[in-house]
Image 1 (cartoon, rainbow, N blue to C red):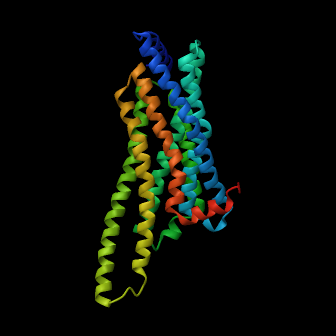
Image 2: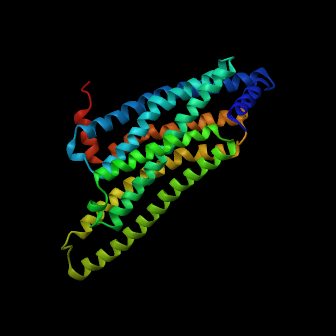
Image 3: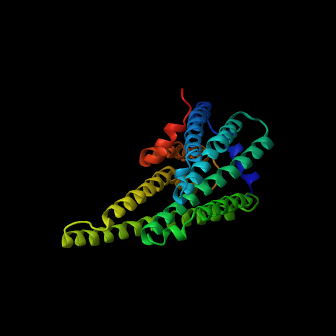
Length: 305
């Protein structure tokens, strides 16, 4: 089914609902959802801008893991200044515009940017999980394996791949849905597997270090301190992944259930899209809460009110 036929089906669904009260109720929900997204977009813009500016003004924060985190903050910033405004316009046009061509154009533009930025976020979180796994599994080799230039190249590759993927908008609905499902499954699978391996490795090293401490009487080589540092870093990565999964999961369920475009599907996708956008708002607060160096950088560089 083409995008045009989907939009036509949606338009017909909006016009064929029985009962003026139901139509008004759905219209009101869509409008309220748009209004809610305005402060969310502003908060996402301010929060992620402060994080990126704080890291940029603090050279001591330049490390591969922070660079990857900035890649996620950049995609969240793009959500706030691009995807959410397009989402608001697209929903308002669906409710009030009489021009089907205008609706189709904005729907395609919003879907393109929306899927692109969501794909970037999912891929970046997966790479962050892999980064933490390498840091724990290959602690001695990590500085050689993971460098700032390599981290930057990975982020550029992710952006290029995810920008090219929306070309599937021109393909059939089946191909588009399948591609989205495959990319999503791979990213979530990589993140989940990485954190399970991290947990297993941390538990193993903790037991080993505790046995050594009991045998020697004290931690002579600082292994326990290093393990606690890696454990905290892995936990931070897991929290970022968990929050993303919680925010994205409702949309995945709705997307899978409503394969055809109906008024109920459009309404459900709109509401769950707002939950997805919440992820871009929450992330800067997570960075400041879990990472003291980023919190201090934001405090020192934020505008004095």
